[in-house]
Length: 428
Ligand code: KE4
Image (cartoon, rainbow, N blue to C red; front, side, top):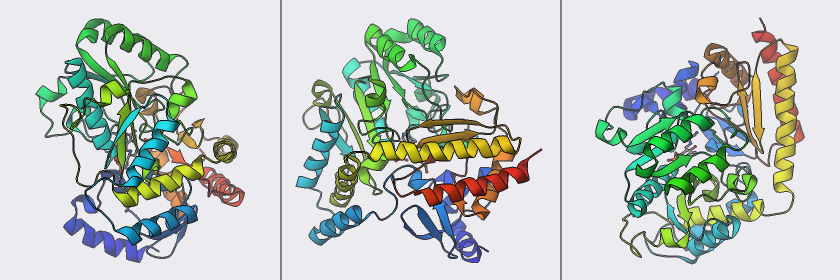
């Protein structure tokens, strides 16, 4: 069935920790071995053994157009003709910076880096520098990459593998990080009342996607904005996942809130390694070499990544793209909901644009504590049966489902049909 993947995984485990280059890919929490992917096209992946899989991971978010979109492939080919990396400024990085600044009103200036981790790590450093404060607030279950200060009560792979923070992160550093329940207005008000004058920044996924999908409760983001204003802390929106995903201007456009700093990644690189952080000019001009806050990167602004990002954003800027993404996502999530109900399986679902969530627990799911009530064993069986049915989901209850522009009605219908059979197997 998966002989080639198994053989590759055997070899990989001798050479790469856990046989993977990112923990969640190891599928440990769902009790299977990872599939090795040979190629992809549109909404499908093809594994090393030739199985076609309808892909709802989308490389964890970047592939919002689907795989090998012609415009992205063409742009990459053109860029490749010019070279792969110069370690010097190019017109492409200016063009992508302009596109992000034009799309996201709170961002007047932006610095390209190579991952979401670098983006959030740098935004935190900048916030600490401009406020002269050390403490930061994050939210339980939110994941902002693996920078030391942020690996506290994190989501995604940390939650999936139930790693408590991580060994190697000094307690002295963790002492500067306060992690409080997401969507808990009283908790954040209390934390700011006690520590507000020492808090450099609150960093939040404006729509949480690393504990499964958990949208902000009504007013929660506005409260964060008000509290930051009151205590002189910076509000950082980690839009690595939501940027250009939930709206062309990100979650901040959707909810009408302007953070002080924003982090991006994933989609703005069109599938190539990229990250970025940006915000008001007065803040960003503190970043070296314009200002004293040091941050650097050999491959930052890499021309291939810039070309893929520009081509992706150009497609996303076209009229009707987000409406169509939301529409097909709505068909999918309501189909999954109905299939579960028909089989008597209790699930709680959520949708923000083309980011979807399905928890095996009674709703509502407003926090990481709620999400952790999910039946992880049932999720594992669901995951395995869906893979066997040709549906590729994230191998963790604490991840989101991503729909792309390449998921046509046929693919969505096939997914719902597969879920109906799988839920029937799961039914009590
Ligand atoms: P990277 O360093 O992985 O590019 O970005 C870190 C990051 C930061 N902020 C948010 C909101 C993120 O979702 C991420 C990374 N997302 C995970 C998936 N939920 C990446 C997958 C992985 O770790 O392999």
